[in-house]
Image (cartoon, rainbow, N blue to C red; front, top):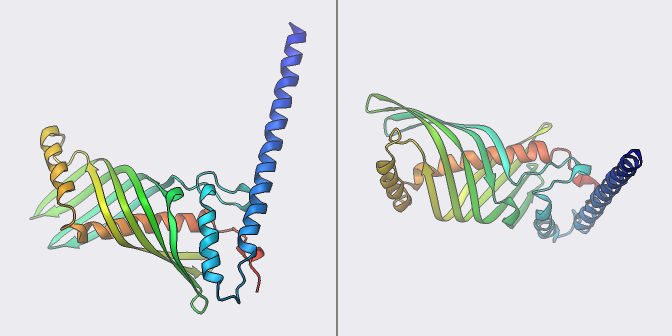
Amino acid sequence: MSGVSQTTGRGTGAFAETFKTNICRSQTTATTNIKKLFSSCKKRSKDFDACIKRAFNKLRPYFNRGIPDMGVAPFDPHFAKEVKQIRNLFGMGYTLTLHDVFERGWTQSTVTKYKTDWENQQIIYSQYFPEKWLEGDYEFKGDVLGLDVLRSGRWNLTLRDYSQTTRIKRNGEGVEVHVEVDHIGDMDIHVGNLLRGRSVMEMVLDRIINATWKPGFAMIRPLINDLVSTAFTDIWSKSFRNFPIQNFIHD
């Protein structure tokens, strides 16, 4: 029995060492590849913005696994603990709080435009998503026609043929991020417990909302902007805060 135990122990140790070695090689390869992506981008070149756009698009395989050597955490899916929106529309005031929000689809996205604004220390770029998926919990508090309304439950949102423009500006050691929705080709939204668990009526309302969302897009758009802006602020402030891009790009 002791011989079997010792052999198993040596085997486990060898496996762990091999696994660790492969991980280190993978991270080294990732770092080398990323250096190559950005090293051809010269600040003084008229092709600089196009070069950065190409490099960002080639980074997509790392979105769901991160780049540990460079302090980049995975962000597909992205997780937001809380997103809060306070609005007053047509005399109706409400507070919508989204909890434990997961956002997926970053790996399939494509940067379609990129512009560096050196004078204002900001970058502006447009991004296209074939599909983007969001889900989480919600809590709604509102005043409708003088009546207090309180609802909570699960929700999910699918955006198809979706594009957005993002502005990222340096703010001391942090960044300011603002996202604007440019286009949504199609959308599915499902919100649970809108009618206090009346399942048949909720299914009917669900279908009505999804069939007629375009006329109400003006009300939905600010919420999507807030959601995506929160995600990007987290991603750039946490995942890319220490990304050493200055080490790869030269004059």
